[in-house]
Length: 445
Image (cartoon, rainbow, N blue to C red; front, side, top):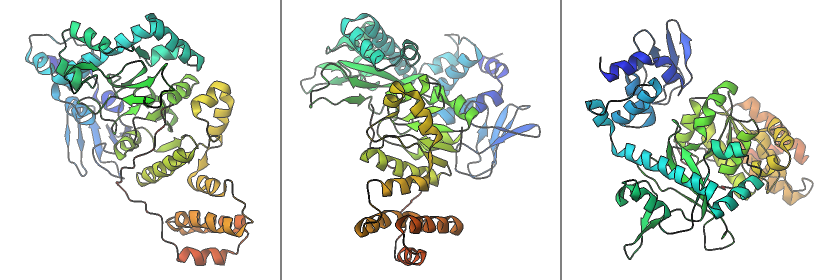
């Protein structure tokens, strides 16, 4: 028996695919919305008896567990082989054709990222400045258990600390560069990308490390130093496709049938630490259609909990537009201005729970923001509020729902509904284009 057949025999296709998307029993088979194309009626079927899957809809794709993992993870056969061998508890023999095929460039980069994480973890625990960084993190109420769970580390403030370590492990300069961990100066010298920073490893859906976020430490008041830097796009890491923490949150999202979306690494760690393990964070600078499509595999319900400063409010509105087009049921967690989830939880976790419980519907959120800091009795304020809300109301497709919000605006402004309706006819609907990839102002606290 080949090792491929051994892996197939040990794994249940329903369990493997069910780890990625929501499957529903349909007679002897299971069905779901196809994760490989957009659809409203399930056309994706899994056959436990035959151990195969097939989409009878738009993409008409199908195959075995290897084909599914390759497509869903966007990886080559060799990488899918290693991943499934690990799940099945099968040790690949080094001399087999399967093993040789699995030794891809991606595998070398995964190894570099894993070794790099161990290097940074050791620095956090054992170096003098690393211990200061650890005290800082503990001071922000991040627990020892969370430091280990999220594998936080420290990058020493030297030019070639990590590079020298990786060279000693027989990795080349080019491989280190391809992993996004090294740079060359104009004079040709090679140096570490991450120096003097607290390190947050970034995990893919299989909990393998694909990149890093580095938060400045010690010289944080230097205006020339970026507070955060991230791994650039690489063979492993694509910020538009990764959601920080999804590997740890996906099961809880499915169980609770709701996903909490936050902005920063620290926000997410604190939210998980206090028992809300169905949360993820945007990675880098964007909330994208690809990320939303991944989330939709686990739940249609989204709670957006971004900072409520000006940038945060803009991010929420853009995120709402994008998620609405993908058919999500959305609520917004309204936080005190200038406060983020990590800060609220560290001071009073009950305030965070209360904010979640009081999450607003989309239109309640728009109304809340439009009236914030304005006197609805003032004629100019009335005009400004109406200018914000009328385009939003205009695009509501359901006339009953639209009429409700016309009445609500008329009541709050103390104006007759007929006047609001007349102004609404002159108003252009706020654009809400499907497929647009909004770049969201991102605060990695």
